[in-house]
Amino acid sequence: MKIHNIKYLLIAAFMLVISACDPIVDEQHLENSTDVAGVQLTSAQSPAGGNKITLSMNTPGVTGYWDYNLGKALTNEVTIVYPIPGKSTFTFVGTLGGEFFTKTIDVQVDRLDTPLEQDWYDLVSPNTAAGKTWVFDGVGGDGGFWWFMSPPDNPDSAMSAWWNAGGSGDSVPADVAGKMHFDLNAGANYTHYQTASAAAEKGSFVLDIANKKLYITNSKILGYEAGNAANEYNIITLTEDKLVLYVPRSLKDPGTGWTFVYKPQ
Image (cartoon, rainbow, N blue to C red):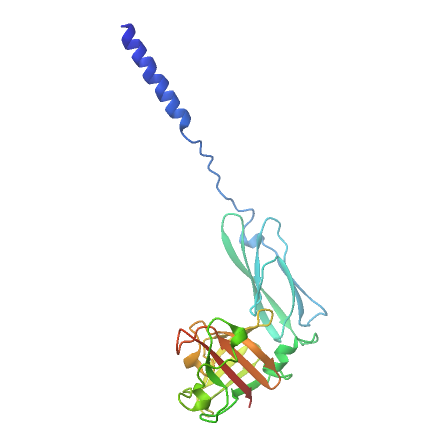
């Protein structure tokens, strides 16, 4: 009888040791600090109606970022000089604590009374509503360097031609006689024309001055055969009379880069 008691005591002790080794899980669930209706977005313009805008998210416990259409600001408050007159919608993307949300605010810009960065005027002209048209800086077989293969993954080597496709006349782009137009008439508008008289293919663009990038949306760049699927281009040169873009990996040959050189029409 004593032997059986000792056996049961040993089994019980063993079970206690095993149970003591089980991890203690403290389950914590994220909870919302408010709801979307409780998120307060405000805007201020200096001066009133002008294009210098401060966007603010003022609700404690909420974090996120501003999408102001032409870029993003990873902060609850940002001041921008907006280049587009008219009513624009800005979006705050954030978390309430337990879930993500988006909320928008409309701002009316009546006049561009704060000067833009020079790159905007170079790309779209000082008459931002009328805009500016760009064409290739050359024609097929002219010997010039305006649409050519270049080293991959290195914007610093954008002007080093591996194969002068357009200038040599070996492989001119399909839209060599086309054009592209940028304007800021109630939006960042972009239009591609396959030829000078072809139908317009309308889209939009983002000029990211800080990162020297140009993005095309719902349309295509002039020289698109050598572009990239993301329609994202490095800006090598942007002046009043010259625009040079570069892709690190080209659709025409994924193992190379490609360089595009344009002039105003």
